[in-house]
Structures are given as structure tokens and as C-alpha cells.
Length: 186
Image 1 (spheres, helix red, strand yellow):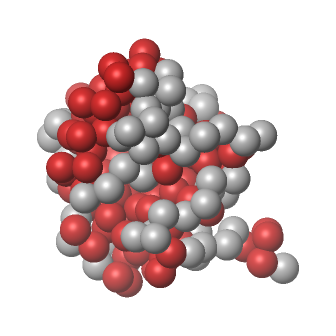
Image 2: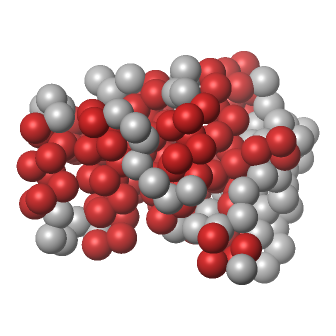
Image 3: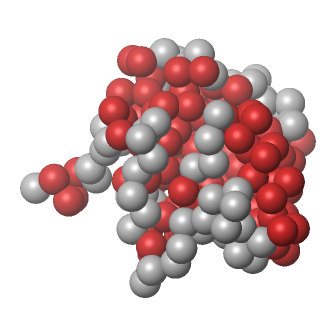
């Protein structure tokens, strides 16, 4: 399946303010957003979900843990590379990022509980997560933050599906962080 990767100039007029906002925040519009440029309502929804996740109480490094856990679970080459890059700005340690890229938990009890919870929500779609939820709470997270994790899982699943279906090319900014899922590397 091929869809155009829009620029600010080729995006629908209603999508252009979102392109400008993403460019201002990130310095560029990642391809996973750019493909939505011709669909203003979808672009608005995607950007809104991303904003809701980003404006919660979780720290930037915690949000990257969620996004990496979900992306690895969904075997999304594009999003693992992207969030490996974004983890630098979020001050998530290289050691934690590398562990997650390898399918392991970060070497931090709190972040590991968060990663396990996000991964379980992703793989089991919210069913049978009581052990991971209990671990999440025991690590010091608040019950309301479980809803923030769900928003993060939903947002990342949307971008993972988009990137996987379209086999999106990595943005130049993500290329140094290219990733191949273990099952594909064999």
C-alpha cells in the first residue's frame, strides 16, 4: 500500500497548522504523521491523541518507555527507531533504550513495571493484566496514570499500524536508530 508522504505545501489546507506545530516542536514532521496530511480530520485526531498523551502526568522518559514497549511488541521498525531518537531528548538512558530495543525491561524497577504494564496492555488488549497493573501501582504509579498508559498504548498502536502497513521509510533523523525485530533478523 502506498500513500503520499505530505509536506506542508502538499497537505490539505486544514492540516497545515498541525504540520507547522509539529515542525516547531520537533524540527520536522515525521513520516508517520505526514501520511495523514491529506485527511484533516484524521490528522486532527492523531495529533489530539498525541497531545493528550504528552500533556499527562507521566514524565517524558516514562512516555518513551511506553512508546518503545508498545512499538517493540508490535514489531514496528519505524516507531522503535523514532522513539529511540526521541528518548535522547527525554533523557532516557542509552542502557534503558538498548534493553527495550532487545525486548528486555529497563534496569530500573519503576520503569520496568511501566514497560511490563504497557506491553501487556498491547499484547493482551487490556485482558488479564491484573498482575502487571498491580506491579505498576506497587512501583509508585497512581491508578489515574493507568488511563494515561492506555492513551499512550492507543496512540502508539495507531502509529505502529500506520507505519507497519505502509512500510514507511525512516526519516533522516531516525536513520541512525534503525531497528530490525528479532524475528526478522534471523
